[in-house]
Image (cartoon, rainbow, N blue to C red; front, side, top):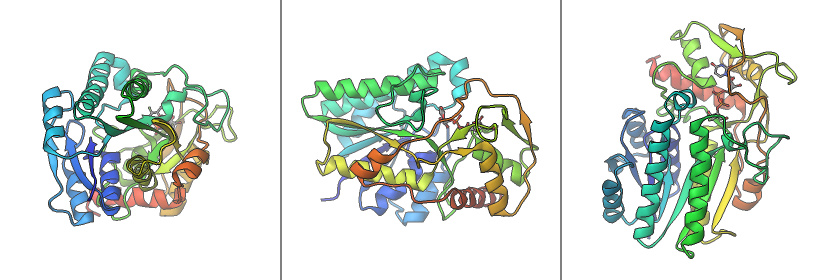
Length: 342
Ligand code: UFG
């Protein structure tokens, strides 16, 4: 029997790529989204890529506990991947209550509904933000978490703890995996789905592609006086399709009873530090263009350097990032051109 995976926030950037990989791995998927931070482009793109015109879509808000329970009653859900959340770091500093209310309530509703149906496998989308400014790099899953620098980051740390406690109290009925993403970038090779930021992008790669296409005049590189080889920050940029595949490995691990603990945590990164300047240069080279950029002051809250030690995910889940930064940056550019109709 095919297993059913509920993907909350399944029409967003990560959710849509995960949906494609799950469908291609033979899972049934229910996409649920309230389209508060995306439109239907990626949902339609997923249907086109996979040929699944019948892909179930539930337009709903996970803060509505009644709707979440109804969803669990409607489908035979074997596992949930929870993405539905607000994700803008700066906005979370300005509107903390909005972030705590939305990101915590929606996750609590999922866990309550899962508990009421007698248990479930829950995969939570966490972030490298839980490591804060680490004392040493690369970070392993055992690296101590640090206080987050934003309410958004705090919600990730809090949801990790909530899932751990719920799993512990459930006497084996609830199982959890926390995936800590590093910096997801790129787009599906079909160029039919990708990142669709609303307004001015906060993240580096959408800002680069929008500058290259002419939507933005100039990219600001935030800080070139960091204690790094070229003075710009170091990050672990992970291809979105590689990242999506990690979810398939994690879900399969849960459903096939291969977990070693009832709640597990994995870093999802490449293990390869890349500086902002290196990324910009690689984008220019691989796509054969010149980007208008300038150095600007540091952005408050940015950590100097963080990258993953992904060995646990490599050995335990059997997952490994395979794409080069160049391949990923080509895909990101193809997606931006697709959006511009070029
Ligand atoms: N950067 C620029 N110019 C820009 C945008 C970003 O120079 O216009 C730099 C940043 O200063 C940083 C690097 O590019 O050095 C990456 O920045 P992103 O905003 O793309 O990514 P972050 O590492 O800041 O953010 C990631 C996730 C967030 C998460 C955060 C916490 O995208 O969801 O890590 O560490 F909250």
